[in-house]
Length: 499
Image (cartoon, rainbow, N blue to C red; front, side, top):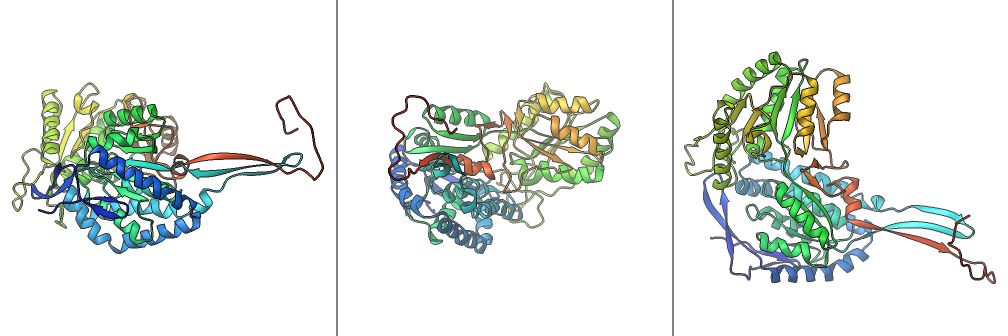
């Protein structure tokens, strides 16, 4: 069986801990390869290599660093088909969806190529007599990324591209469930001219992640995962003096107003709820129709549409979505569905027990639809992270907004309406980090920032966009004075001013 490696100092390094994890092909349910689980000593060694390589990379001017990113981007595009097939085979999302995963990541690389402009500081001429004041943005040093299984290309690229563009070295600990694409991205960075040691990948579980939160060489940590883990990473990293941007779970609502185009809404909800088998932090998992008439009409349309969705292997071009990533994930979602039934939600469509004839051992679930879910139910409170859509009926607009505001998660939310005043009011008032207006998955484009509120995000700055440059650099401000020859002011015992 194929054994993967780490990628350290520009080369593949065999695992030395003796521990390995199984990497499955979710479509077949069979083990496809094994991934090494790094020990703490192996991670510390990778950090030492990164720290040594970072100094030369930081001394490379930003335009030359940007040229490496340009070549890296070209190589990723050239190998997009191979990367998408590999990603799909380890995650279970369809190949078309895997291409989207890669594309959303490369868009951030495109943004980071503009780093020579983004790193420009400020300058004030003659702030005082003969005094100029200016600022510069400088890299932090070594930064680390801990990324989830569900976007093996997009999120590593979201973290790595700005970090590298700013002159940092980057150490990535990807999910042990989907490690192959992150390894290939690091290979391609070196092939594009990136110095060995500047982009390293250490594979493993929590034992590999722990040193990234405590080693003094790591100056900042980016994390995406569950809210429980995000809170832990944030607390541990910041306690050790590091910057941290940590993104957790979600329970994204879609508010459907009575004037909405229900055909458009059904198209949007079906794709947003069941694409990638619901294994997206931006998946819409709660539909909130306003008024009983709207709810009845929406549920009838959703039931008909969802019943016809096709579940198949990740490489099936006719499949709407594929399997879940592991059998453990499938069982967890199955347990949530059972909990919803026991809580007396109305289960209109039950995806349990779905199989695919050609792959009887795959980790499949069909789409499930609940109606008359209430805020007290666990299926409303908890992130299911699977192909399950809950309908929560709201009596009026204010009740719908209150549902969004009072939920502990605050990642993304959408409103569907033809009324501009309603849309504007909703966007301004709702207490959620990302808002879609007639857009089901409100993921900002690469030059805006991505991030949720409340239990969905921990830290002051968000991913990609201008915040990513601020996160990966620190500002140094210089006050400069050049005296005319022979001019002396003498000693001063009061705080200096510019007036």
